[in-house]
Image (cartoon, rainbow, N blue to C red; front, side, top):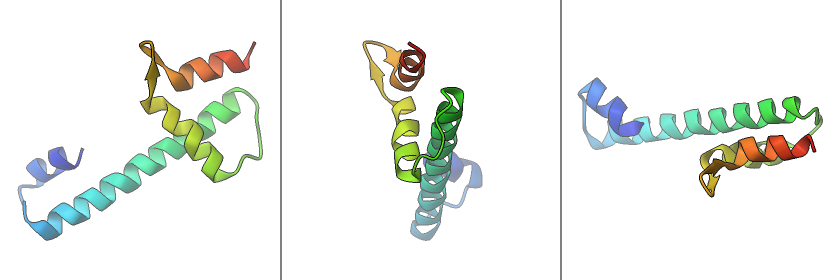
Length: 79
């Protein structure tokens, strides 16, 4: 994501690289929180600490035997 932003921006120098990497990290962290909160709401779990929500959201970026671990975990929660 950072590389794409750098190429689109056209200003490739150390300071700009650091800015875009920091922004991309923030964006990914926000997306992970969003995914974790959505999963918690979907399975009707409330009051989770943000650290736990973040861990749940990060499961979206993991696979096991070709299956998305977050989707699998949500499915299993309904059993």
